[in-house]
Image (cartoon, rainbow, N blue to C red; front, side):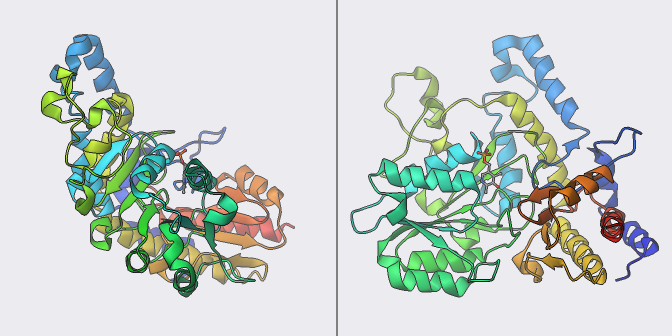
Amino acid sequence: MENTLSYAQQQDQQDPLRSYRDRFLFPKNDNGDPLLYFCGNSLGLQPKKTQEYLSQELEDWATYGVEGHTDARHPWMPYHEFLTEQMAQIVGAKPEEVIIMNTLSVNLHLMMVSFYQPTAERYKIIIERDAFPSDKYAVESQLQFHGFSPENGLILWEPREGEELCRFEDLESILKEKGHEVALLLIGSTNYYSGQSFPLAEITELGHQHGAKVGFDLAHGAGNIQPSLHEVGADFAVWCTYKYLNSGPGSLGGCFIHERHLDNTGLPRFSGWWGHDKATRFNMRHDFKPIPTAEGWQLSNPPILSMAAIRASLDIFAEAGMEALRKKSIQLTGYLEFLLESLQDPKINLITPKNPKERGCQLSIQVKDADKKLHEQLTKAGVISDWREPDVIRVAPTPLYNSFEDVYEFVNRLKRIRNER
Ligand SMILES: *Cc1c(COP(=O)(O)O)cnc(C)c1O
């Protein structure tokens, strides 16, 4: 690798996915120049086609009114089914294991209703330290709902003193000591702060060995890493579609329930009519009979406009393919790492693991002598990145719409700002 613009441009020319960039809308500065966008881990960019997909549903609503449920070009009644196959591909699941519904935190609660069934002896929940706040709040409130205190019931898997990343052997130690008390492991597949991707298969096996259920939050994993959920054998997983999956602010979440649980009608669940047997859903007088797939966890008829945006995005993912995307992602983030290291700035420290298997797109860059002013300067220089107090910039070059030149430009601007201190 080389720290030159011509090398970056050459990499872009050789990139089989380079044309996908043109399918997205980039925010621009006041002069109309596109900004360097590295926040796909927070809100993915809008595909140009999204408007068309949404317009189609608005038109069909205007044309058909309620009949659109059956007569729209993509009928609304089974609309969620149009998304399942492609979403299942992205997370490595069987279609019957996946459903798009609600939003992430809601799905997390629904999954805990089914898979967190504490007893007086076994009630504790393990999460990683620096779990996303919503996950922590959800878990704490579930503990309290079942009559346990978070102080006692929540176990944090923490990095060692002076370290930023969680070690698998420390999770093993926790379970060795307290495994008989643990009901659930809920781990972010890829940590939002450090960018660390955890070994999903090993964690699942470990949790199951100790008799606990295992769920993953793929908010930073879906559309980024390849989590192979079915093979990994997790009990459940949840994710959102507005980060790497580019489906628009606040869009619906995805949910995975492993095949082995699908026909277990003994599992507690919060139910709604959309989870009821499709054949008798509209008879309205039958006792609840869940659809024997992940669809059985649905509550409401879903917002079609949000689903149209998801469909627009999934069509792009299906065309590009996760395999090719991941391959480019490893190169792109590897290039970013190389450029940052070539700065030889003693105050810059990469928190994210070096091994590509232990990370996705994102690098979390600690700048030890910086404060929020650095982020403001980057923004002024046309870079959209994310700042985490006290001193971390998170940058996520995504393989669908970021280029090697973007990465080169980012490091170049960062260097300039650092030199002007
Ligand atoms: C983004 C994110 C969320 C957000 O949850 P919503 O319910 O979609 O608002 C939750 N957890 C994690 C780990 C996230 O990264």
